[in-house]
Length: 119
Image 1 (cartoon, rainbow, N blue to C red):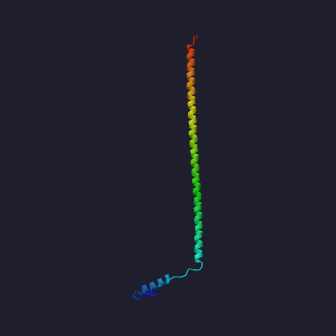
Image 2 (cartoon, rainbow, N blue to C red):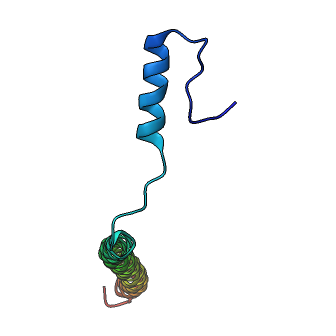
Image 3 (cartoon, rainbow, N blue to C red):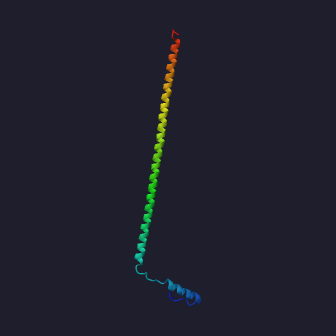
């Protein structure tokens, strides 16, 4: 059976529909310059997509660098606070040691004064 001729056994409405479909779906050559326009548009979209990705990458890199700097800064602040705390504790221990030595020396001096025969 020829593909271009409608089937004579079909209802005339269906045969007409089939004929119109065949006409609509027949091969037609592409318009002149279509390939060039499609490729140009594809390249343009590709450039735009790369530009957007570059913009996102730039933002993400800056965000990551900011987070790293914030973490380093926070670490330095914590380290400095712990060093200050450690130095303060060492100074406190030195003061307490000095007070014990002074207290012991005063007790010895007081004992000598009290035990002195002129008293």
